[in-house]
Amino acid sequence: MNTASAVEPHRNKRGESSRAAIFGAALDLFQERGYEATTMRAIAVRAGVSLGSSYHYFPSKEHLVLEFYRHTHELHLAVIAPLLSREKDLAARLRGVIRAVIVTCEPFHGVAGSIFSSVANPASAVNPFGPTSRALRDEVIAMYAEVVSGSDAKVPSDLAAELPLLLWLYQMGILYFWIFDRSQGRLRTLEVIDQTTDLIVRLISLANLPVLRGSRRRALALVRSIAEGSH
Amino acid sequence: MNTASAVEPHRNKRGESSRAAIFGAALDLFQERGYEATTMRAIAVRAGVSLGSSYHYFPSKEHLVLEFYRHTHELHLAVIAPLLSREKDLAARLRGVIRAVIVTCEPFHGVAGSIFSSVANPASAVNPFGPTSRALRDEVIAMYAEVVSGSDAKVPSDLAAELPLLLWLYQMGILYFWIFDRSQGRLRTLEVIDQTTDLIVRLISLANLPVLRGSRRRALALVRSIAEGSH
DNA sequence: GATCGGAGTTGAACATGTTCAATAACACTT
DNA sequence: AAGTGTTATTGAACATGTTCAACTCCGATC
Image (tube, rainbow over all chains, first blue to last red; front, side, top):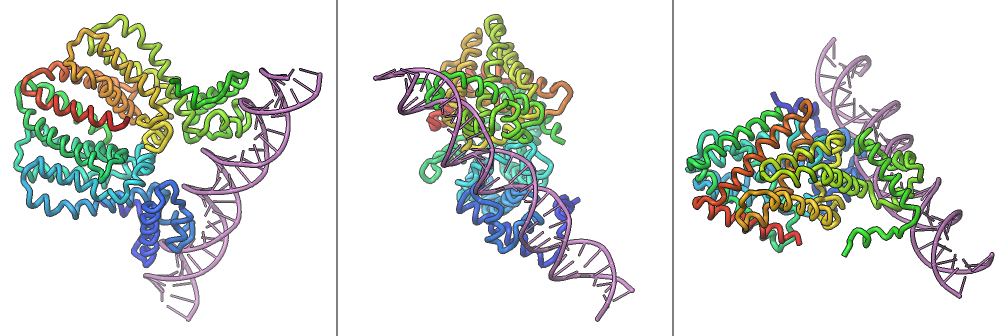
């Protein structure tokens, strides 16, 4: 059931504090120096453990990134909770949620670039499409399902089924843009978010037009077939 | 004018043969063992030079990947030349060109995954959006410009201006899908190519509909603003 | 042909992610 | 309290990308 516990057989011990110390040190150092400039040795030193101990809790440096994902995801969830219970307009919900993503990640803007390097590697443990990150991925997609279902927007059912997945992809695209964004206060990214969320919601409402129905069906069938291919 | 010669001050010498030997060895070994499993030492040995010599011609392992790009791009150009001069239907041109991409890259399917790791890193020399790969990127985009302009399709002029860039992005998306594709003969990717090229051409023809004109304008304005942001 | 500057070449040295066998600490049973 | 097996911890050893100072070789200039 719970893949996390299967992968991490760390039965409750006081040793959990070592794990927390290692992750905390990694988080600090990533922020201070960037991902690549942070050595496993430096992490171990700041955490007050030995180099080998770090590898006892995290099989690789990339697994620290995975934990980092989960960390920011939980921050994100906490931030958007009020919005999701208050706002019913789909465009506003989507805009707020995506804005919250980049606001939450902002402290790690400098790091994100080099992290994405590991992320894109299909062989990597932290690849968003891979099995290791499946649990987290499903949580994020579920969040977008709630963004849609909790709104008052009328979405064709076939589109509604795939929309959470598509929005998750959209979020990754925004994040990738954000990584390159060097504008003051990340205003460019915010602008792009406003424009694209608006566009997305508009296209959703157009999806029911007779002229578009055929293309919509075909596009969604394609999305479905691609999505199921990744088990 | 020519950035390549500015970056590579290797005045003509017989030493060019070393460069070729190193790249050839790298190409072979990448294919045989994959990118990460290929060590710079192994490349040097097979090329018959010393480790240090490899770094004289290629500042990093990633720069070998850049050369690899250029190599496959030129193969690709040669393959699609007949098609582009013969076929006038946009869908057929696009389908043929994209299919040729994955056919050309097929020998490197196993390698591509780990290569993409470096590629996605914004700080990397081989990042497609970065300055180092600009020359090659412009060539590829120019090729897609010819795919469109050489067809008999009627494309709204504002869309025509951005279409080559969008098709370049589309190609990268297909390549990323292809990397994950483990199906027999890469049939899944071929299927996705057929479906998506068809869909793209259909959407282009729909772009003139009055209901869509507003969204099209806004989407293209967005694309333009994003594209110019990267200088 | 002697000289000289720069390209070509070399291998040792370095930094760092990762592995591993050995040891210590702990929890739980008897 | 003794025993036992699992977890925690350690640091040395390894592999590999990269750097660098030294050296060689070629080609041009006088």
